Length: 150
Image (cartoon, rainbow, N blue to C red; front, top):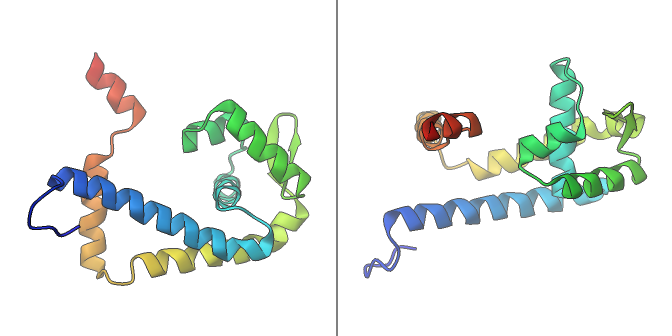
């Protein structure tokens, strides 16, 4: 990516780097979750439901759709596979972790932490703060986008 001919603009280079980093992170997470019979996407959904539970929030399909910007049919398929795998169950349109999921959530969270530690291993706390600030400055929520349109 460091080419003196500058084939890519700085913005294109950053965009490509973000995509590559996300792909590598997902691949690493997938490898680490294989032992638990989970895909990386299922691991992220499990993590979301667990976080929402800890905050006292119930989780519905629409919450997953919005959080991950996925279509209804994609979420439905993921959830159905997770139900068949005894990871979650659905009750009154609410998604809940099964006893099995409760027994492995600690390991899933640890695997996720290992991936994050590996990803950011070369950054100091100050660099992490700077990166967080810059990425938050770039990120515009859906609500903010709507406000700018008006």
